[in-house]
Image (tube, rainbow, N blue to C red):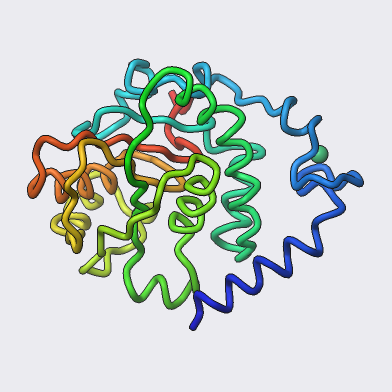
Length: 236
Ligand SMILES: [Zn+2]
């Protein structure tokens, strides 16, 4: 029911915002104008589209790297932080489409040139309670939008069967306790390569927990991570 409501909101938002760039508000047919798209800068960030696990400055912040690669548009700042906040806290689902355009321009095109795409996109789920409060899962919206562009089907293969506390409110140790056994695999994954989709990666503990759940059942599967922003880089 809520899902349908947000789909409708998205369609209305799309119509209303159609004539203006979502970022600079200049008159434009596109959701993000060419200027904003080409001019986006992601400070102190490796070349977007490359595997971030190859960069110690990022990898050292990540907990238990049990996935094969990590891609992100940039750091959690400026444009990206603004769009993600609009998506999650101001409930503007169209921000997902804007993030997807940036992801396509800066990350996806490069991946498409260099490697085989994953067979399925799996959004990181919210708990039922958080889903009810927010009305939609931002990772699922992103997965749908990216999936349409990359032509990869979205699969809701994970469930969060425990209501974990908001990770951002916890210290490192508490974050890990909070996530222990948080996910459940609800669909079989007879694939070689899948990709988890999330909005922001901070320590990677949530993703690592989800990957652990997937690999417990399908140990040989390759898991990539695509997210919109990483939060810890550049803090020290
Ligand atoms: Zn613009």
